[in-house]
Length: 218
Image (cartoon, rainbow, N blue to C red; front, top):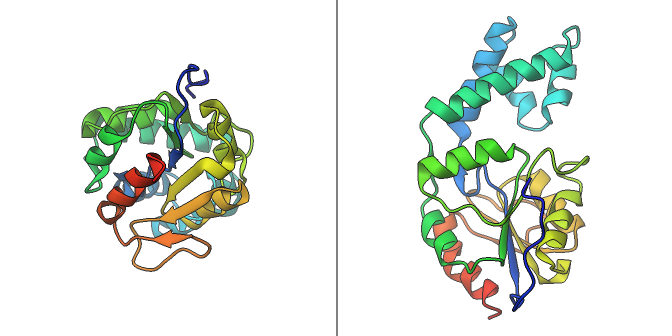
């Protein structure tokens, strides 16, 4: 995690907190491929493993699909595959992501991810996306999404109150995290609205003008 709060100065009127995978970076195929390789290594059904992995954190996934295996060894194998995928996998940013992030003023936005910062930086480097001053990753908090802790941590590092923060998410656990943090939550990149979102956009591109307007205090 980028651990230092944003330097004092003229404070932004509003703040935007982004999820990463599924929101800014299209990594669905990568995640499926990584979990398939992992499952095959352990002689498990790849489709079942991926189904569980979509709704649980890795340690919870291992407990369900491989209860007799050492969870730490399982996690080490998964991390190895994920790091290799960052180095060699094919990634794409969602339409509108580059325009949006380059247009946001420094100090008014952050990334809040269940992944690890070094992987986020690798993916952003390969897709040409800028990295903000504040990145809250899996190592930064003891409780991940849907707990409100990750988004509250990002707001604190930015010096922002929850009422001044907009969360951009694609997944139910992230939406719940933002709502529990007392923030405005908009959903993107889904055909149907995730339960609880204040606004829904089928694609990130559609949301760009409204996100920029929010960030400017408009």
